[in-house]
Amino acid sequence: MGQQPTGLSVAPEQQIKSYAQDEIDLVDLGVALLRRWKLILAVVVVCTVLGLMVALLKQPSYGYKAAIQLAAYTTTDGHTVRLLSPQSAGDLLQNGLVDTAVTHYADAHKLDARKLKIDVQTSKDSDVVVLSGKGTLALQPAFVSVEKAAASLLAQNTSAQIEAYKANIQAELNHTKIDLARLQDPQRIAAAKAALKQAWLVAQAKLANLEQQHGVLQKKQTGLNQSVKLYKGLAKDLGDYLAKARRDGLSSARAATPTQAMTAMLLGNQIQQNLSQLTNINQQLSVTLPQQIAETEAALANNTQRQLSQQAVVERTKLDYQNFDAQHARDVQAQQISINKLHDQLNNIQGTQLIAEPVRSIQPVGLSRKAIVILAFVAGIFLALLAAGAAGYWDAVRRAMKSA
Image (cartoon, rainbow, N blue to C red; front, side, top):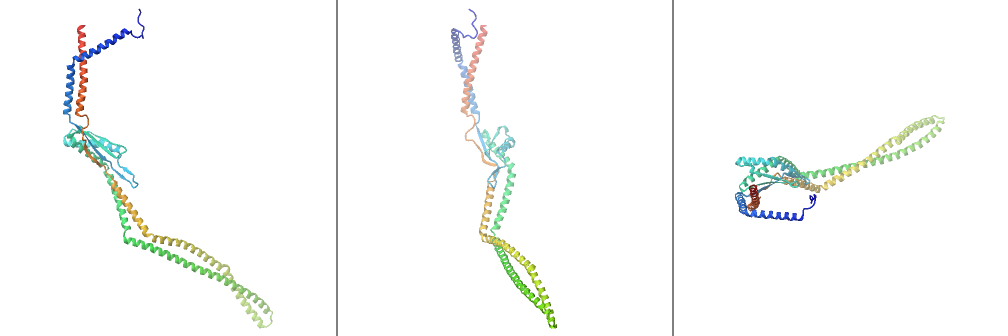
């Protein structure tokens, strides 16, 4: 027969033989491992003993944590302002302050600084920074001192700003207290109340004076109206008299006797005087009196307007005087509220400080001794199997070399 085509499956007899060969190999492997049980046991025992020795020699490590409250203050509207963000504080600590504190402590106590590794934990939603270290029980004083020193160094970065803000709030508080003391001074209260009463009385006096002036102007207006009426009557009488005198004067002028002539002359003089008086009266009626009446009416209108304004002043000063006690009580209450708010602001000012002293964890952290022994045992089994396999492979190679 020709060559078997590529891609065709192996014959069933060949597959059975292959499976049998694989089974024989596995059996041989098992036999080989059993033959080397002493090696396997020795490796497992050695690894387990080594793990036990490491567990016994290894000192347990504890966690050392400290919580630092970041500096902040509260504004008048209740908004909290941080002088340092948690991220900025964490960067300062991690990249300088912690290392500085570790170096100082290590130099002072002749200690390896690498043993004092401290991590910084922050959260953007919290104003607390956590310092976390891990070391043996003997290093507890070192971790406590270093974490306190790091917190102190961080506090120094914001102390000047905090003190300046405190000074401003304290100055404002002192000023508000002085204002309150002035408000509550009995002499000042009496003087202020007396001043309001005096202002009310003065406003009333000005109003009374305006009312008096109004009465005078009204009387003047009445007198001017009466003068107009009187002058009109005089003008009528003089007009009638002059008309009659002219008639009489013309008839006397026709008389031929000296007496009649003298009478006519006297009548003429009288007529001239009456004409002059009538002219003056007409001047008063047409110019002088109307002007005086207009000025008086304007003065009355102005006086009325001033009375209305002064009446408003009287009402305002009256209310100020009558409401003085209530308004004074409100002013005192407002000052006291301001003082309380300033006190709250002072009390809510917090500097950077340790809110939780460095403490050691109750239980050791990291792998326990039991876990170390178990890991060593498991590692021993793995290494033992590798060693047994390697030994079997080496024996097979030697046999193959001898048979060749």
